[in-house]
Amino acid sequence: MEEQEYWESDPESLVFDRDRHIYYLLMMYQLLPSPYQGQEINRLTLAYFVISGLDILRALDRIDKEAVINWVLSLQAHPRNESTFEKGQFYGFHGSRSSQFQSNNNGAAIFNGSHLASTYCALAILKTVGYDLSLIDSELLLKSMKELQQPDGCFMPIHTGGETDLRFVFCAAAICSMLGNWSGMDREKAKEYIVNCQSYDGGFGLIPGSESHGGATYCAVASLKLMGFLEEDLLSKKASCDIINVPLLLDWSLQKQAQDGGFQGRANKPTDTCYAFWVGGVLRILGADKFINESALRGFLLTCQSEYGGFSKFPGLLPDLYHSYYGFCAYSLLKEPGLNSLCVELGLTDVAAVGL
Image (cartoon, rainbow, N blue to C red; front, side, top):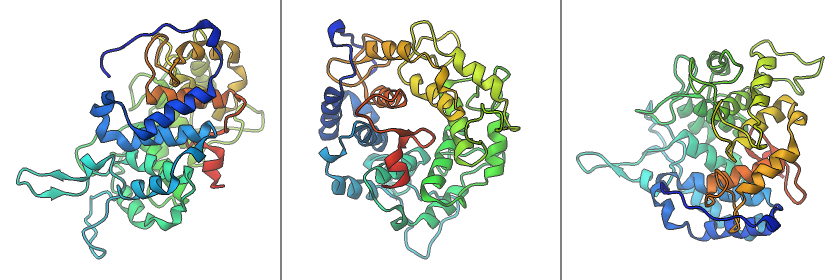
């Protein structure tokens, strides 16, 4: 997928084509094209884009939910035996079979390559297809996840050798929220880390002192919302927030909508389909999505809609699962008819989030 391919859009077909998007996702559900071979390690994440995408499009009845449940559960990491809990190991979910069966230099199998992002995607898929998460050994998962939290409040995604940034704070918060159990993290420490990531311009960087970024800003704001540190409708006179600078954050977020209607992830960068959700979602959580120029945003997104179904990163490129999913999320935020509404802070539909 490193080489970009281009296609010419048909001006007469520039309406949200729900049926074609469903066919695109069903094709990906049946068989991933060869360009995704390099993403094998992230197969569970790709599955999340497909399954949750079909839920947004109200087409979840097209898949075998029982088969999906069995496959996802097969990727969970477990201790060698019930009485053994190896401190430092994380018992979440593997991203794919290739991370589930690694070998060390001596050829001995290492059965635990589970990852916070994969675990978030696994639980999100299971909630989406209606699986009862109380059937999972959440105590073991959360106890081992807490070992991943660092002294500064951030999280490593794996039990050894991983980077730390806001992405994994969000994953941890979302995991605790979905399981209804916050024993897996110290929320106060996580809050302090997030606060330290807010930049002078109001946005959030992935780590303290780094450049503000749309994805990092979503992870920060969504985490604070999930952890209970942000009130509803922060722009109302009755609401208050003394942990982050909301007016500066609002200003930064609104400035990210460019003249072509799309959203940028950073200042002076081209607009990109996914930031319609990352930044648009922040504005929804803040209660400020009414300030989005919705007509202009729809116009930009339609230029990224593929004739094959799905969305591309930029106009004229072929579609990919990542940008397709966040394109569907953006249209849900825009209240497109025929789509399920979103629980923005969890990255799931409202139906999946409440477990209906």
